[in-house]
Length: 309
Image (cartoon, rainbow, N blue to C red; front, side, top):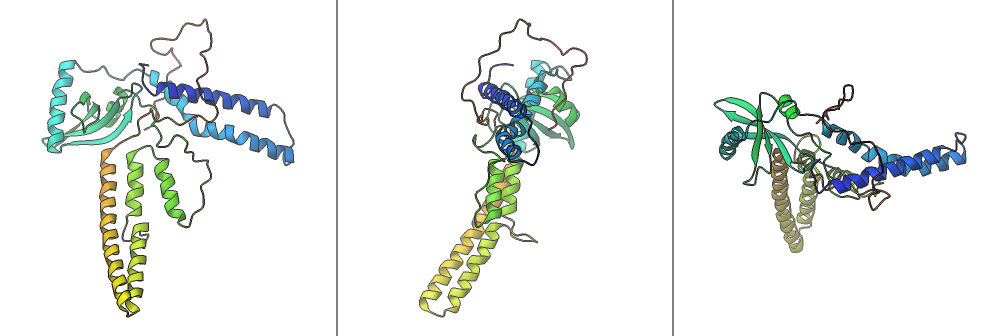
């Protein structure tokens, strides 16, 4: 693969997984009787290494998928320029609708989008940030599947916080639901996941109103209480609380719009935001081998499985 800023982090993760596998094998070489104190201690010792594989093991399959050949040849440079001009014009008109994105091994942002022209649509594969002036069309396809198979394969998305883990115990708080939502954002990889959280917490009607709507109800009830005191200070406080409730309602609407923007962005975290390894801090030196590297298409019977997106 061409050099990219996230490759060193991947190498370190793979070395970390290799270290975890070695520790798992070491711990399991001494069988113990189930249900005993020794078995419990063994399980405690295994846990960090098993969770490292459960959380980061996906990277091995994703990297193996990088070696698949594209399903169709790339169009000529002239064709790419022609489609790029058409796509950029459509973007300005609002007739380009992105629906999926990922990063490739070189660190390029790849986006699939519908190009709407004359009440008909076609699928384009794009490279680059669509909100910047420098992006281009890689190819034009009849459907989403063909576009995905012909485009550069995706690499694992990055993480928001390198030290975060779904296996870390969450600190109990008074607002458990909101704490869980924060955890959902920390563990999110795609903008649609964060959009779902924002749209959920800003829901102001229905069976399950969001936390901001409940807070607005709390403030309004407190204002009603202050007004019922029938004092000047109570009236002043009630007025202040009603102003806060209105401001909160405006904030709720702004957050809801932000969630809709994230939903339409079809964004994904860049792969250089790699998880921090659990155990190692530097890559292991490359192993010595006399076997020449495998180049070209995979031999018969060693085809890679396409990664589900």
